[in-house]
Image 1 (cartoon, helix red, strand yellow):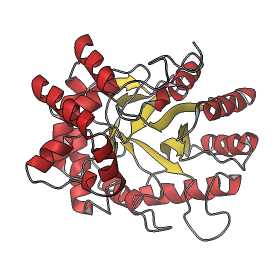
Image 2 (cartoon, one colour):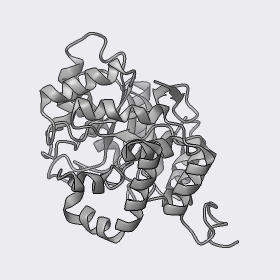
Image 3 (cartoon, helix red, strand yellow):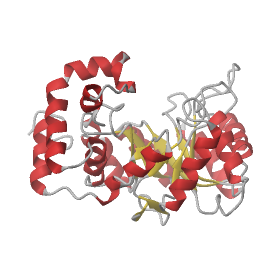
Length: 330
């Protein structure tokens, strides 16, 4: 497994990040523990979760599963860079969500208890809070850092200008500020290239793409349909997107077949070839799915293949891959 620094920080993380959103709702606790053990066997040290995962309000089901895994010992906690998030509602009362200083304090302590650890490596804002001033947020975060409860801070689902706001507010306080941004980014959703990626690069944030396979649409969905297998891309919004982009996805899968590679690994490998990307988040539901994803970390795509992928999935903006403001103007 290759490692890289998370943004401008000195923290070393694996080039693939283990997403845990399936732990609990889709994957049993025993299987979740087996997946995390297998991740360590392969050298993955970067795990991502959130206090709302498990989708039972206030329970933090997924964090609890990870906490019980840490409690088994064997240096599981010490070998893991654990990232979690706050913002979503953990209760029915007014201060049970978002980024007030009060909720930051309560949410951090609750996550620490569920994770059975005394510190969080990377604490991420799951969404921007338009109602709380940055001075309040950074003051609350600085207290957590002074207490040794959190080491690094990150954002998720921020626009480029939100990243700039947060970074400049931290700068005025002499605080390290953000070291990462977790954003939706994949071949089918490339709008992050306009402003999010340039902002992250300017301020030294590592980008952690979520939904790297666009809900499974880049994971060989048409091949699986032909083979008679079901997938989460067969219903709802994913099914609508599949019908809209069927020809493009078919061409993509044919290109992957010519390369002799699984479409999922090509999609992940493409992200790893993008400047500023630290580690795409993979969300295996089984240990076997985790094993198959590891090929992406070693898969090298040449310039010809990258150009073909750009033809199939053009960069955003009328002027192609140029970032803002050139994408909008000249």
